[in-house]
Amino acid sequence: MSIFLETDRLALRRFSESEGDVDRLLGLDNDPDVMRFINGGRPTTRDAIRTEVLPRFLHDCPCIGDRVFWAAEERGTGQFLGWFVLRPLEDHSCAVVELGYRLRRAAWGRGLATEGSLALIRKGFTELGVQRVTANTMTVNSRSRRVMEKAGLRYVRTFFEEWPDVIEGSGLGDVEYALTKADWELREARQRTP
Image (cartoon, rainbow, N blue to C red; front, side, top):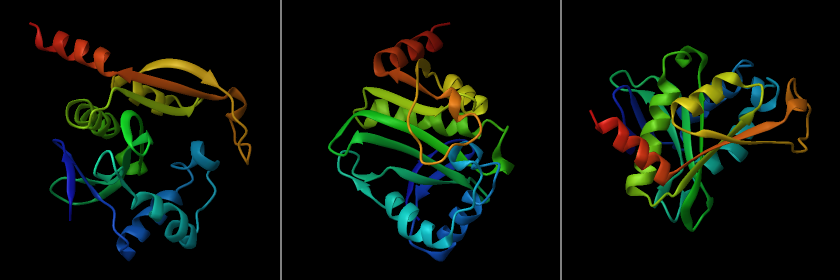
């Protein structure tokens, strides 16, 4: 198992082509509550996990020198909690990356999305050459927006895109949040000052 990053409660590791990871992703993507703001809560097939989801998760990004999607497990128990992503908008430049996460319902409300996001943001700015982190969600997804805010990202804009399927709340659009390295460094310096 290749660990990319650890926090107090999380271990982020590479996904594999194993049936275990297929099963974990299938369980995650078949929880209607988890998928509510992604696809309206519709189920995902095993074939879609194998042919669409997993190949994206196994892609190595040249500028990071590793994957960009990581399985999130609880440290100590190894229990699968979901996944995180820190994906460059361009494969050969880590200047701007998109932050994302999807966690099982059992992991909600425990601060794990914020903890993982903060750790990835720190790694991006201190080790990977990242200059700006962005994140998007539906306007109505207040929980995800709160995670972005706790991770230091700030609201940038509301935008509207054409999606293949209309889901509840999509008429209100999506929101973009962002954090620059300069703003992150300023915040870090303030937190260190007594």
